[in-house]
Structure formats: structure tokens, C-alpha cells
Image (cartoon, rainbow, N blue to C red):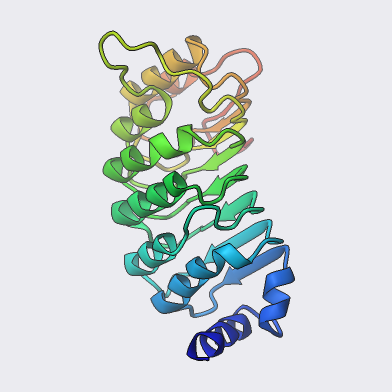
Length: 240
């Protein structure tokens, strides 16, 4: 009974009339709903009973890393089975939250994820390094937004060009459908651009068509090396 009352309260915060409405909802937008860490924890546990949900947007500045941790912790195997778009713009995750999300993806949550936006989430190199293997295993991921996070070259390399153990074949079938990559206002330098260019030249990210590099500390010349036929590289925040 207490759980039901908590779920009803969450639905009211989300602007839904009832728990039944939440179960049937295809889109849920949580923009500054004054959610608590407990609310996000509950939302995570409800992931297994929201079969219709396709788009989940959480833009919440009222909770810190604990909220992101508890949300991810509640996402079990097969949670949010139909969600193709997860946007958590301004939800403070930090490296710990990114690691927790990686664990949730590893358990089989969000199996249909095509669009993931983690902008302004305070994810550093350690967080992206933890998250990258899980992202690389998402077979249908098409758009990845990581803008305005403090990671740099090390985190980027983990995503696009992780080292291969001696004697092991290079990984195949990873990020093959990624079409857009948002890296705006991160800490990628000339070295990171070189890593990205090399990965592209080697055939990684074969479907990539748009990449946003505006606002990074790399030089214009370094960013220009990332360009190749069919790839739109935004260096000034104008085109992507």
C-alpha cells in the first residue's frame, strides 16, 4: 500500500492522472518536477512495469549524484523494454552515476536504446571509461550526446578506440549504427582529435554522419583532421 501511494505521488509530480496513465504512457517528460532521489529510485524500480514507454526525458537539477545512482540501481534486466530515447539533460550523474548506468545497461536494461543524451551530467574521464564498454555493446545506438561534460582525451579514446589486448582480434560490430555524436564543450584536445580521426580512418563508426566538436580546447586544424567524406563536423556550434 505504501509503495502504491508513493507511485501515485510520483505520477502526480510527473503530471499524470494515475498509475494506469503512467503504465500506458509512451512519452514521459520530467522537466524540473522537484523530484527527490527517492522519486528517481522508485522510477527505476517501475522500469519493469512500463512496457509502452518509448521516450523518457529527465531534466532535473534538484537532485545530485545520489538520485542518478538510485535511478540506475533500480533498472534491472529488461527494464524500460521499449525506451528508444533516454535524455537526462542536467541530471547530475558524475562518474559514480555513469558507472551505475553502465552496470544497469550491463544487466540488460534499455535493450532498445537508440538515442542517449547525457549532456551536462558532470561525467569525467573515469565515468566515460566505465560507461564506454556498455555503450559499445548497444547494437542499435544511433545518437549519443555527451556535450558539456568534463571528460577529455582518455574518456573519448575508451569510447571510440579502446586498446586491444595483445594477441586479441580487434572488436567488431560496435557502434556500427551511430550516426550522431555530440562532444560540444568537453575537454578534448588535439590528441583526442587525432585519436578520433584515426578511429574513423580505421573503419570505426562507419555510420557516423554528424559530430559536434564546438567549444573544445583543440585547435581548428586538429578538429579539421576529423572530417572525412560524408561527415559533417561542427567546429563553431552552427551546424549540428
